[in-house]
Amino acid sequence: MTKKLGIGIIGAGYISCAHSIAFNSVAAIMQPNLDVNFAACCSPFPEELAEFKDRFNFDAGYEDWRDLVNDPAVDLVIIGSPPNLHFEQAKLALEKGKHLLAEKPVAFNADECKVLYELAKANNLHNAVGFTYMANPGMFLARELIAEKKLGEIYSFNGHFLVDDFAYPDKPWHWSCDEKIGGYGTTDDLGYHIVGKLVTLFGLPSRTVGCRQTKVAQRKDSEGNIRPVTSDDMASAILEYENGISGIIQVSRTATGRDQFIHLEVNGSKGSFILDMESMNEISIFLREEDKRLEGFRRVMIGPEHKNYSRFCPAAGHGLGFNDFIIIQNGHFLGEIAGTSEGTPEGTPEGRGGETYKAIADLEMAWKVQKVIDAIATSSDTEKWVDLAQN
Ligand SMILES: NC(=O)c1ccc[n+]([C@@H]2O[C@H](COP(=O)([O-])OP(=O)(O)OC[C@H]3O[C@@H](n4cnc5c(N)ncnc54)[C@H](O)[C@@H]3O)[C@@H](O)[C@H]2O)c1
Image 1 (cartoon, protein in one colour):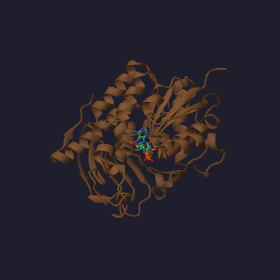
Image 2 (spheres, helix red, strand yellow; image 1 turned 90 degrees about the vertical axis):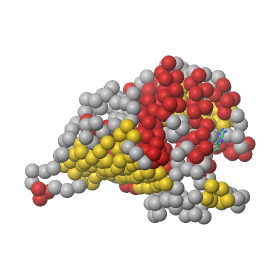
Image 3 (tube, rainbow, N blue to C red; image 1 turned 60 degrees about the vertical axis):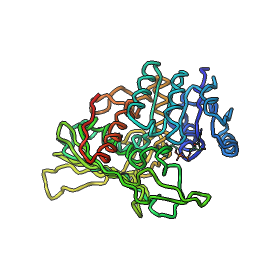
Image 4 (cartoon, rainbow, N blue to C red; image 1 turned 120 degrees about the horizontal axis):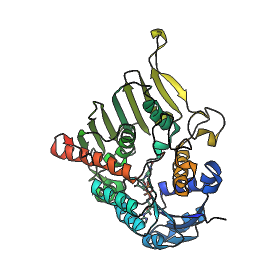
């Protein structure tokens, strides 16, 4: 019997729970030989650590993340801690020869992302980054529509990630309000997802102009102390490509009434699509018709015809959710580590468009995305367009 891959998860909060749930189901849903051993978990808070260790039945629990990285039973380190810790944790994991699945943002700037990317490459280690929504079967279809030129020449896009969890001034201060812990704010937290999709579909833009704002400048913490909000609450940007594609993105956590409006629209000379995560089990597609009377956006329900869906359910319209996307993402990543066919969406190195692509995002993608995020922030500071370094 081959040894199961030992996983070690740093952090015991929202996304660490989602990863643990996903790793519990990966073998059943994606492929039986991808089962893992829950080797170790980590939280600096003893109560949280004990509860998390028990809930997911980890072999070991550590209060110091370095002990988890150094544990010989851990082959793959998953980072679900606050962003200010990611770079140091990822770097040590890669230096110690561990595969890496890091949550976004993996670092606070593109130079740090490049260090991690090069370290993983030099040490021949598998790596993935939690872009999550990239694993939506609708996103695989969007990639195919573009690769197969079904939309013709691509003209433009608009992308939004709007939520309202910080819309109300009485929402308590949280670590993400501090740029020293959370990074830029919505620009990297939410922007990572939208920019990630654009970089996946079209590559790196050539220039951008952006604007970041903080709407609620201070909040009370859980002890009633007033603390400044140093990260941004909203940001918008124009992105332009060498080949003429251009568009806008907007991210906000103060978009009153919006729960999870992750919306991407792409327009081409022959058609368009809309992916909207508030209706995550459908994709709206417009294709030009000879008979103009029949033209219009049609709603395509995600079902067994679309990548990975039938692993969950044989019938269309039953719907996948956020945690299922993480099962798909982590399953493909484990497949890549194991060298099985799960490493690619079709079980071959090529998508239907004939284009070779990875099913999941990695450190190289995070480096590119971070270049765009950094450029938006620089543009906001300087009030000027910023050119993006292409390598
Ligand atoms: N991909 C996605 O869709 C997605 C969704 C949510 C969060 N995230 C990302 O995941 C990361 C964590 O976010 P969250 O919402 O889970 O936060 P959270 O506050 O719920 O959890 C953070 C965890 O890190 C632990 N932690 C704090 N300091 C630590 C230390 N020194 N060592 C080890 N653990 C420590 C905390 O105890 C907590 O368990 C963020 O970077 C966030 O952007 C990604």
